[in-house]
Length: 120
Image 1 (tube, rainbow, N blue to C red):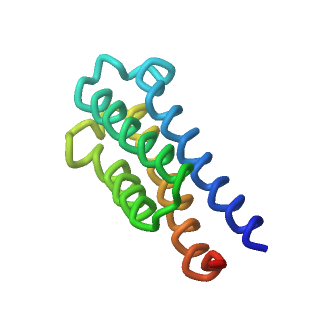
Image 2 (cartoon, helix red, strand yellow):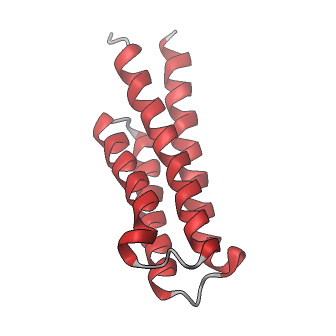
């Protein structure tokens, strides 16, 4: 059973890693690379999310999921806080990916609290 739970946590971390990759390439793919604040925000947040996901894949720590949750909330709020709400593509990308990061991170935190790993 512990193996299944670890696989679940790994799945959540893989989801965050994929979301980080999508966020990183989004300024070019979605077309807001010229929007400096939005592009740099996407790149920096993606690097943080990717690094945390890679760290969590090697050794799970609940604090990493909490930091992911905060980064996800930042992504949701950043179009208004950084002033790129007028760029619909950049705003939608940040909000949608932020919601997905928050959901994956909240799922991981919930799972770790309701299914603690078995210790030998």
